[in-house]
Image 1 (cartoon, rainbow, N blue to C red):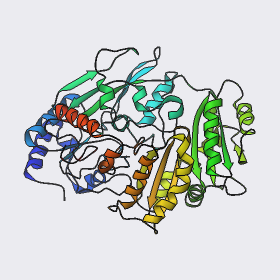
Image 2: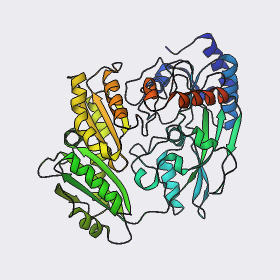
Image 3: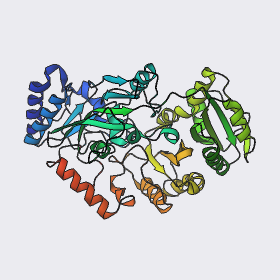
Image 4: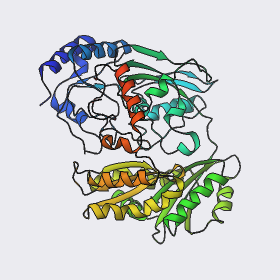
Length: 461
């Protein structure tokens, strides 16, 4: 049953007057999917879903929510992995997928404006049509939205070359928790007119307001890419190779790390051919874009590396896409095993190999029945630790892994956000003064605490 408490019922009535009956959903059969995250770990009682299509409608919804004391949970493609867009505190889901336009494309400067509901794939297509490229990419590109990527400062597969969402963000249009609309979508690169409110909202996980549009920087289109899978005799040699590639290959686009268990799972569950004659402890997927011959460039570097066991080279675009499937299908393959605890962390490069090698043993010491799957972005130290075989509410493994990451000088969140899954461990990454400053910003921009409560910040903030 959908939440029908008196304030929520009043909010639904107000929403009908603001966006129209067609865009207010209360039938649990239609709203249930909006009350569970992609992992299946975080599930809430179905909440009403409101689908505004104009910024004025969003502002009116926020004003009504303030008056009625109803929480608003912004949502786009609902591909989040840390429970950051699930209405566990009740309230109303604000579905922003009607803000799906990509416009004001400036082929001269390499910029465009995208609605919060536009998919990353749509932005990439618009950029390509204008002779440019969007620098952020990940496997959920055709479902994940611009609003979600801004909310979490998503990084993705090409962070090593272009950085994450914040580096592409020139400005935003958003409705703050006060119901005020800020709109700064500059057509220029250099703009130091005071506080960068877009950067403030980027990574705020919807706790300060609802982003409706973003002005995005584009990057030059890449040269033809060379893609290889490289098998290594140890995780240490693979990580060492990633460091060498970063230092010696200027045109490096991606360096993705896989370990034997995850690669075997992808092959068995997704029907892919095993890429190597003999299984290897670690694999790097390496992509280089160069005006020179990228194959020759890679061959020269790879032949000098220690620990290389076998190399598979893509000779055309079709084979390149096939090699990428080994990496991009990890998340889906793990989901078939069962709901996973998603621990998206970053380690200093000097600590990465030891962590990836040792974390399965650490998990087993806490939960012997659990299975650990590691993969990620070797070039920037970001590893996705997925743990299956434990109950969704059992956070003992999360505690052990995140404390270990902090002890190694790493970060407990690299690109998925804090959400609900890691909120209680925020102190491992941010000191008391940091958290106090964030709480003060939250209270200033969302004085009634209606914007995505229960996410990111400590309880009661």
